[in-house]
Amino acid sequence: MSTSAEQVVSQSGREAKILNEGYGSGAWHGPDLKAAIADVSADLAWWRPGPGRHTIAEVALHHAYFLRSVRAQIAGTPPEPFVLDGEDWFELGDGSRLGWPQVHATVDAQQRALLALVNDVETGRVRSSLAEPERFALVLGITCHAVYHAGQIQLIKRLKTSQR
Image 1 (cartoon, rainbow, N blue to C red):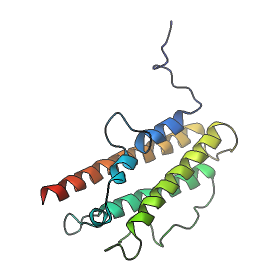
Image 2 (cartoon, rainbow, N blue to C red):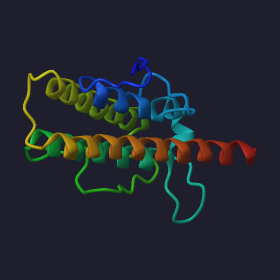
Image 3 (cartoon, helix red, strand yellow):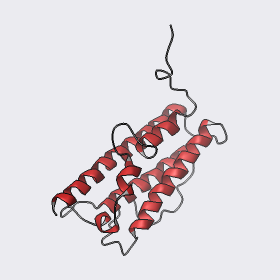
């Protein structure tokens, strides 16, 4: 039986490829999270679609928080301090607490740090405290999280342009 390269995903590099599908090199399914936030202005980042709804900046920072959490779980270490005190969802208000460039940079830095760790684990330079199936589940989960929030951000952008 012969198999094509498309049918076989090598063990080495699989998790990094999955991470890049949600944030990175351009996904076949539409804008990944990196693409979704790339063209967001500061004004748009702080626009709240309605009472009790999150801004793009809040969605992005929420994702960055979970990237940090996943990295700590894979590394088997306590998470390092985050850019803001608190957890999960951060009320950012008008951006005076943390500016959009800092939020955007935090998402990018957390993604790059997770990708570097996953690459190090996959190449054997670092040993994870998790078994491969647990690690894979975290990588897949954080990627689905990125894709989900990329869709939300695209919707928020569309809502804002429809109000003009």
